Length: 620
Image: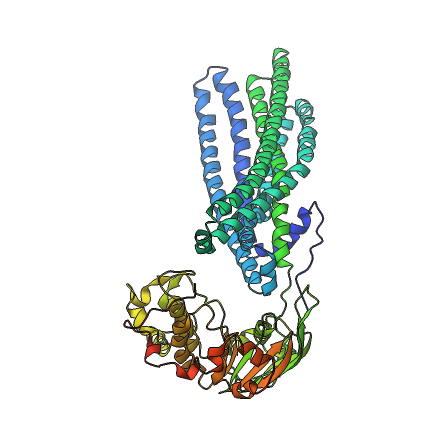
């Protein structure tokens, strides 16, 4: 069984590895990156020429007091400045466009990979933290791979131009001032390791804050009902405190680093002015040359500082790189079979489902949740699978949908092992109604239409009528255009379930998988959905996983699981006559034993759920 890896990245994650992993995502934009670099080089060259023209203007026009000598260098200076400004604007705009394209591409790739990962990956990772990785960490990688690369190349060219010009003016003074360069590198190296660790802690804290907010908003009803507002505020305060401490340390380190570089630059500038004054007094240097030389050195130190700052940016980016690579390196539990192993089958299956001697345990847990389990179901047949909690019922649903592959044995659709079918084709032929009714934050119509691509309004209405949902939908303020959301108060539990049934009807798959379809519904609401469920099940292979034994009365077969093993199989009536686990489970449900709650007892008229009916409700 393939599971996500344990990630053995070293404490100091190498930026080189991260760059190599994410650089391929720039394919298609590399010509634009080259254009951005060229624009930056031209802008730096224009700045260099402008400084030389400034020196000429100072010596020939200002120092000598010649007005006629002013216009030519002034005009050239203005022209060069305009060229530099235009090229700089184009380069910066193109750079921002390219960087955002990279962010969109990387985020889409990580998101697509997330959707392939098995359910247990999301059980082990907080949703808020995963959201933070898709936002803040993606931006950090962009700083490393795109913006950082462009900045590094352009900074090197800027250093080359400014240092070269300074050497041409006075190579001896230039070499004397270049002695300070190692101080910048040593300072950066001193701060890099500490800032990397602080960046990691800050990003982890960001993810924790997002998780607390997301979990609280999702469970806001529980929070309010149990008066947990203060507890949730305390959770947020604790996580915010962790983030605050990491952020303060990061801000202090960055500010101390910046101010230290400012002091070093000031010392260098004072040294230049002192040496320049000495050279001017000795007649070996003009005022224009000194000003130009000072300007070049002044322009040289910011790129040197940028290189140091870039090192810190890379250090911080690697803290996000390893978090993203944890996602990208997590392997899906299942994948499409190689083309050579795919068994050609019709796009729409007949619907025969089989499990042959299936044994399975979840990754990281040695306990077998299914043991040598076998069963089959054919179109038109209703099979109810029941048993105590933890018996392995919901695991069977995960295997039928191939979220996992069994350790031994096989799951088959129309006689073909499901691991020999493309995942999309397999899942197109199975409709799942999960235990928790899932809705999108969208209109009622879009929630139903999500069952089939390109569904029309007429298709949606037809499905809603079949699910006995049309009447209450049209009674909503905006009808089918009413916006609903997870946890919405607009619809009751039974109404949401009928919206889900309408979506399943529109999907029209040959295999229907119902996971606890009446969970959380009271007696009346549960009876209301039975008629739509029967219509949905007509002609399909229907597998119902449930604790509610009232649904067993209509079943062609009832399978009873206990600790992963099939312990009983038969009709409701046959199992009642046996003194087995099924009868034991019924002891707590005398109404079911006496036939008072039975699927066929549901009144079709009452099932319509019209405006005159009693509202659906959930158990308290």
